[in-house]
Amino acid sequence: MPEARAGALATLRGVTSGTRYRCRGCGNLTRFDVVATRRTRAFHHYSVGGELEVEDETVLDEQVEAVECRWCGASGDAIETVVVGAEAG
Ligand SMILES: [Zn+2]
Image (cartoon, rainbow, N blue to C red; front, side):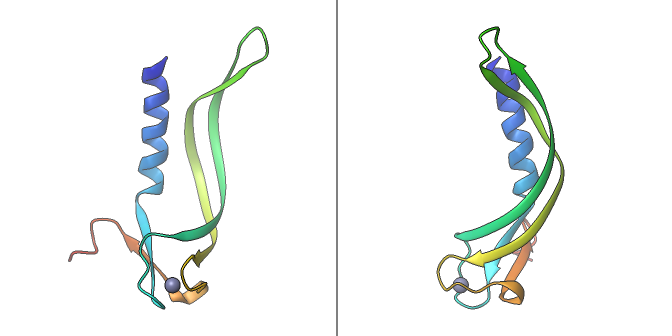
């Protein structure tokens, strides 16, 4: 069902858009290499022919292990985590 898939995507977007990154080195806000471990729950729906469709994927836990700036290569303390909606204040 298209409705179910749209809902799953919205869930993933909601989780990942809660925070964003900012590089203190070069001011980059948009491009980062992120290494993360995700624990997810999803409905695996197989057709009779064995074709898999993953539906209703929910992120239960997410651990971001490393963030590296694509522009200048900075990582660790040089990368600041910004809560979306708080950067204006
Ligand atoms: Zn940078």
